[in-house]
Each structure stands twice: as structure tokens, then as C-alpha cells.
Length: 547
Ligand SMILES: [Zn+2]
Image (cartoon, rainbow, N blue to C red; front, top):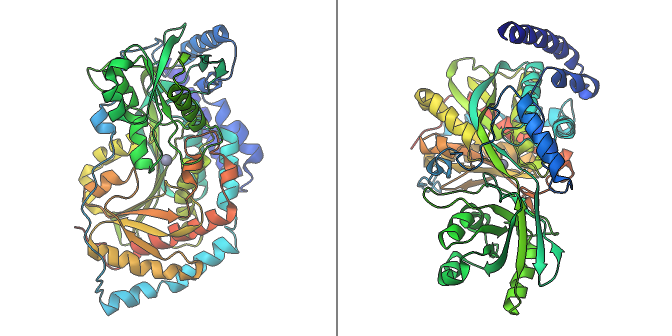
């Protein structure tokens, strides 16, 4: 088979070179449609994931055939003995202690040097808000979203979208554009359904949570126990055995409430529950399920775990409070395949004086599968690629290297970044700052920062350049970002885009995460913040001091 692959690669290479030239016109609409569809053999398993399709037998057949056709996965269906990365590796890094940056005493020379970037800032603003880059981020992002849609880890959508971004970075003349291989989980959403059988018949929308196992083929029919907290579950442990456990936790903050999504199946299994249904982690709902990752624990039975809507969780609570018997039928055909290959996307502007010193701007390219992942996190990924495209367009070459990285496998437990940090561990002391945008690209307010007090003072001063667009807010926090937490733990100063994202969790991980949430003007403003601050930090005479 080797000659065949070599030949395919040569053809694909030639096609990509031709396409790259055509792409210079920036009219993606005709060109891209053919580029990435012809060369890849991976079947699109996304097509069989809809929870609404009716014919179960057909699903099964398509699935089996799809798996047989793909050359990238072992053609066996792994149901329960799949071991993802160890849970300990998939949790967020611990917060780092933060010094108080209140008393800044920067030298007058440094203050003057930072202020001298006003001309560059003005040029960036002019180009993005009124010039060649006006609305470009939105236009390219919407093309990307409309073409690829959701990009769940392990899918051909994701790999095709990675090919697209690599081609786009090359087209924008970034340097050292390449993908870095990452092994990612390959979890498959099968057909999912739930029907309430008592106290009345009612369809309950369910969406399986990442890594969940499925139910037996004919489903689980069981009584339901609704609890509001893990403590209530433990208190009522003797009622829980053999039941489907519904968690109707209050939404307080995302960080707090998400514990129920992450650990619901573990806690339910510990008291003998057959399955876990978790109220979606959102402060606002129009009957929309919000998915996300969940965990299993060693030596605890892996039970099916799905999210339900806020409305249904509250309804089931009211039924139980009235003393009504609740019976539910749950069917889920979710399962995991062996790890598959994905890539972190990397492109650079090589530094003119200190090329080994690096400032990173980043977002993640993968997404959940039930929306389009426009907000989480294609917006963040796009401003991170566009920032370098813009600086390249303006022929601005900083002292240090500016590197754009689009992480893969974020949603399944920060997989891409962990492999990156591990592979580049010997270079990390040369990393000067790491930016991440993964909490929305609404109107920007400024930057959240984690690092030494002295470094915070410099960032604060740099933010003053953004006064014309009113994005000067500086917040020093113990923990910023999700992917970049691993860099911060190693002492690299971290920066996260602070934006008017009070409605972020309305859309997060739901069918509502589409282009409709994004705004061209907001993306332009975010791009100004991203390009200006990353450029100045990469170009300053002094590096950001570490803890
Ligand atoms: Zn995200």
C-alpha cells in the first residue's frame, strides 16, 4: 500500500500548492470546497450521530461500514474496556498564587518605551477597524464554520478544518506553518433518547456527555431519584440503588456547578445508580441541553451519563416532590474507539533578534458536536491566527518570535496542550508569555493575567495603548485560561482575553453555539487587542519577568 499513499501525498501536495495560489484571491467559496474533500479517506462519523434520527438498525449498519472503511482506526468496536487518559491528567491545573500588582514602579524609560508603540497601535486599529482587515475575521470565520460545522475530537470534520487552517496560515505568509501530532480520544455519540413512562409519557431530550458509555441495546428502564446535591445523594443512598439518578443542581458559577457534570456518573454509580442524568450547566435555558466532558473513576462502575435540560430537571423535581412515581426509559449507543491522531496547528512570525524567545497566542480548534463551535472556540482560534496574519500584512516583525497555536482535543480534557507542553518542556524557559482566548470573543474589555507582579505591571502599562477602543481593563487572577494553565504552572506569564461575555454560558456546549452568536465588529475589536498586546510584548526590550 505504500506506493499508493506516496502517490496520494504527491497529488495532494500539488493540489494544495495550486490551491494556495488561488487562495491569494481570498475567495474561499469555490476553491476550498474541493480542496479538502477529495484527498481524505476518513469517513464522516458525524453523520450518524444525530439524536433525532429514527431508524436504529440503519444507524448500526452505517456505523459498522464506516468503521470498516476507515484506514485510521482499528476496525473493532471497543465498548467498555476503553481507557482514556488517566483522570488525573485530564483535570485542570491547580491555581498558582498571585502577588499583588497594585504598586507598580516601572522605570520611566520602560514607560516611555511602551508609550512609543502608539503609532503601531494606531496603524493596527486603522487597518482592522477601517482598512484591509475590516470584517475579515468574521468573513473567514463564517466560511470556516459554514463549511466544517462542529469539530469534535476524533472526527474527520476536525482534521479537515485543521488542514484548512494550515493552508490559510500559509496563504497568509506565516512562517514554519505545520501540524504537531497529538493522540486524541475518539469517542462516538450514538443514537440517544429518553422517554418518560410515568407519571406520564413525555420525550426528554438527552445528550450524552463526553466519554460516556452507552446503555444495553434495549435501554434501561428504571425509576428515577432526583437530588439537588451530592450530599443529598449520599443521605438518600438507600433509595438510590437500581435507579436512574437525576442531578438537579442549582447553577451558581460554572466552576462550581460543573462538578455535577464531571462527577455525576461516579457518585451515582457509588450508590448503585444505573445511569446519571445531569441538569445542563447553564444560567439560562430555552429547553436546551448543554453537553461537556465527564469523568469515570477507577474501580467505580462506568454508567451512562447524559445531560438534560434545566426545564426537565426542574419538572422531574416537582414530580418527585409531589410523591409521584417517576419511570424513565434511557437508550444510548455511545462508545469509544482507540485513540486517534490529530494535530495542534502552529504558525509563526520568526523574531528578528531573539528567535528562540517566544510569545504564544492561542485558542482551541476542536469543539463539541451539537452546535457549530463558533464561539467555543473557533472565534478564539481565529483571532489567534488572524493576529499574525495582520502583523505580517503590516510587515511588523517583532524582536521575539510570535507563535500562533490552535490546540486540538481541548474539550476532551486539554489533550493537545498537554502533549505540546511535554514535547517542548526544554524550551519553556524561553516562552515569554502565553495568550489564550477561550471565553468568548464579544466586545473586549482588556486582559486577565496570571504571573509575577512585575510582569503584571508591564501588561497594565501595555493595555493603556488600547484606550481608544476602551479595552484597558487589567485583572490579576490566580488562574486564567484553560489550556494555558499548564504553561502558567511552569512559570510562564499567562494572559486571557477579558470580554463582555456575561451570556457566554447561555450558548456554551449547546446547539446554540453558532455563527449567530458572533459579531463582526466585536471580532475586529478583539483582533486589535490580540495583535497589539502580543506584538508589543514580543517586541519590548525586556522580557516579562517571571515569578
Ligand atoms: Zn473552549
